[in-house]
Image (cartoon, rainbow, N blue to C red):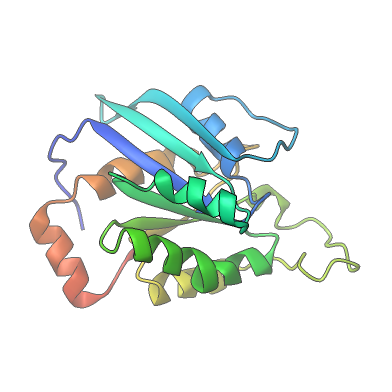
Length: 201
């Protein structure tokens, strides 16, 4: 279905997901085109940039949050949820446990605080999907596109998109999907809630 953009030019997105699933490097790649190779634990960070979709400029603010589950991290994280236009719920395709936590932890949390805010399911680190897994690490099991798509449908995600911050694969598609999702007309949103379907890329 093709959506008509309604002209919301300032967009706030919040990234949630397990620690080390690639949220920070993705936010950096989207806003500055830079790739941060070194992992630095995040408590809270804000990335901003002007992006262009169909030659229209949009101001995009990406709020990067901690994936830790301690009380102080959780309290700080939910403060960023206010006036959020869209959640990017992230997991690593090289870590099946991070996908399981989408349904067990992240969707319940965002729905508790923002019951109606849409979200996109984002599979990160797809460049690592075909690397040989470390058999000593049980969590290092690759997530197939089929398994991730099933999760997107089951959790009523707006769409599922796979990206690599390293190679930039899927990043432009994600940026466009952010703008399209936030600017869907009320009729389009009502139709989606009725049919319980989602666009899978």
